[in-house]
Image (cartoon, rainbow, N blue to C red; front, side, top):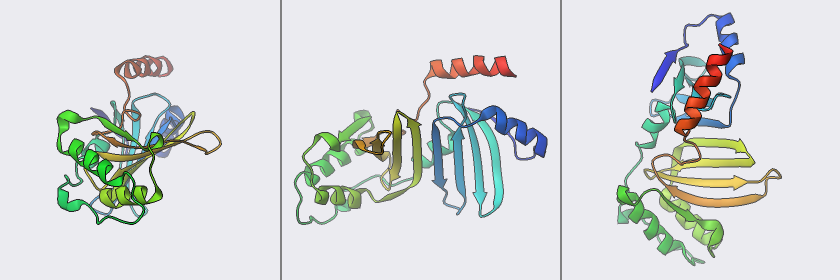
Length: 207
């Protein structure tokens, strides 16, 4: 992971960097354990990330990173709980497939060799009670990711390690996909090696 500290740049240099980088397809927010918040924006160059961390109005960190995903995201994604059967919430009225899906999810989280794994809710007969049951099982997380392209994707970390709730919408905000992704970081966020090489070439042409 390559990183350049931008915290002490003067106003002119900061304006130049902001103009050069622009805003790419992926943005990330992380609520840190020390009550600070990380704001991460991919540049128009894939794999180049602007990472800023604030506490209130105070800017604590401002840096530029190059890599398939920013370091702060990798670190935050490993901090949540590993599951046990005791985490299963009590059954609720209206359950159809919530309980077997919960067991499937927990089995894959416990076994890294069984990852990545996707549970596609869009293709399954599930009720609102099933959705509520799975939401209670996973709990809230501290990472929110948004990607844009054809429509938008919203990817939220849950309270369980390596479990992500993904929702994709089309350009009219209609639902396309809802799933639980069990993996360190969802593939849609990661930059491919060939895209990193392409970004390095493009950046060398404009600098």
